[in-house]
Image 1: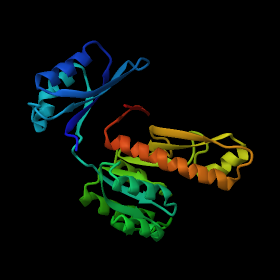
Image 2: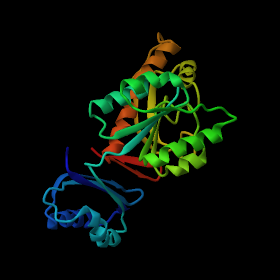
Image 3: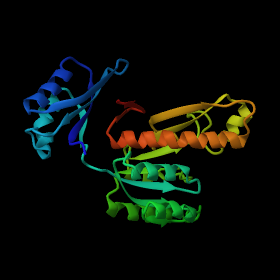
Image 4: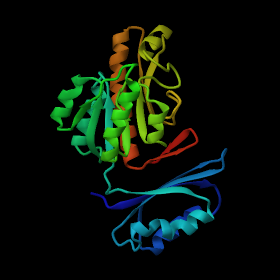
Length: 285
């Protein structure tokens, strides 16, 4: 397992930021493994991800914030640091469509997703076969218009003691309440939308696309905010279709896209490669 630290920085763009960060790591005998940056000239913002080895690094990471604070204050940084050795705890929410769930659990089993998955939550018991196969605890909480508030209370009561870092909505076909979203804000819930947002929002986007006669369909992963399907976009992809494709063909092609797009978003989040700002994201290589 890689033993490294990752620093994500967002601050007003100015001279000397790169040099100050590199010098700070160098003086503590850190060896930089990766460094990537982006300037948003319209907003005059500097965004950076830098990863360095912790072997031989002279600063105890429990003291990192205190040591780094003078540089952060000098450049007015919004920043956070993560450790590659820490495996975040991820809860997966799913309804009846289980293709994204099966894909995520497989990628977790093979080590592609370096996280823990202590719970799968569903409002449909049919997904039990996947939870059982991968030996992940499943909690079925039915949701109806009448019990929605109580169902969310049960979900939150289930998640809190597990100290969940990230919720993944793997085709969970329920709209989360603002209160629920605020519990895991900002940017701690990832959703997969089965269309290329902002086109065809809401339900049955493949039917909408078919009626419109589009030549491309897509999928979008994004962070969840209180606005429906309006959070910062993490990843999107498309596939070409033709006049020969039926609605069922569009749905099948869409499912293949959804699995890939969602897994990329989850992996990038786990690896601290996403830096949200405003309603945008930068994805660092």
